[in-house]
Image (cartoon, rainbow, N blue to C red; front, side):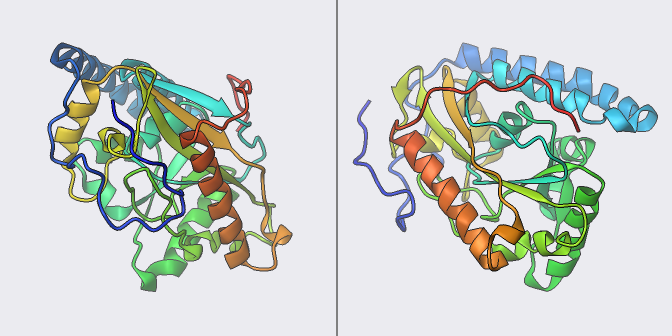
Length: 297
């Protein structure tokens, strides 16, 4: 499997990788794809009514079913998640992560009981919109004139003691670069500065190999979902692959008070995430660190 020359992770890239988003996967097993998608569908159908009942009868335990569900999804879809560092245990906490694919949701959701911050359009997606609502996703309108409303929605959940995941790039990309972070989405840190201290933890996600073979620049769109890719077609192509290694790195915790401004905090998060992705794609990582099985909310 040929690998493309390495690129700096923060380098501006204007051309798409050589594998067309609409292209046919040159390898993989259709039998494996059918098996995985069928099992994924059965698990989803079985656990969806359970989560609805939990939200109705025991809302305090809303996180338990999604946490187990995402662990199962990672196993079914062959995602081998390697963790470096340790997730913050303090609450409230805002995890600030790069965004490569819809696969980021089960990957992060299998490690920490969290809710996600997503654009309002996600709520209307068939099937996935319902799943997002059942995980208590915070839906925000990312138009510039709604920044204050976005901040208030996120602020309310954080002050309730929740752990949220924010993708400040605003969209997914090809996995070879980190897009600029939108500092406006981190304005919630200013809103919480006089209340319960908000922990902000940068997180890097990198999809590094398939069946032990490095995913080079040209093949990373097999897992990255971006641009005009059709969700169903991409999911089918991905499900036919073997085992995918994903490296998730939890960086040092930060607080707004550690920086002179929100923009400096945003720059720090971007540099930490970009550096983590760069090291993961380049194979320059420290040995795994143990990840606790349970977290206190």
